[in-house]
Image 1 (cartoon, rainbow, N blue to C red):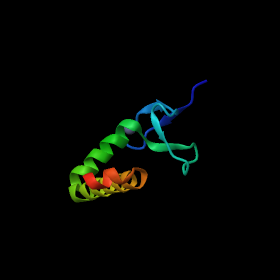
Image 2: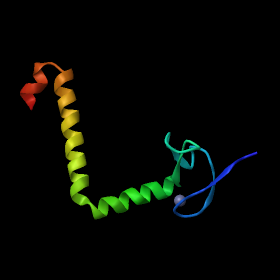
Image 3: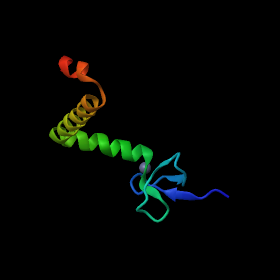
Image 4: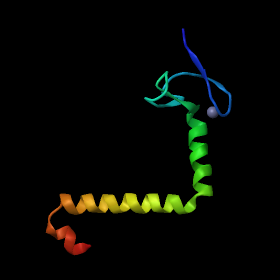
Length: 81
Ligand SMILES: [Zn+2]
């Protein structure tokens, strides 16, 4: 018997599996309140409303990746940067 979960945003009835919902350890059923489609939609909308935050996020992420790269590789990489 399959169990269903109603998305808190689009109110669609979907199987309560990780195929349709993102994992969320803080919720009772270990799944997110919104379905995957709504989650991605929400993120895009949030990004449209907060372009500066998205920019900062990516900047921070790129910076971190670069830092890791420097730490991992030899001095040859550092010369390139
Ligand atoms: Zn939904």
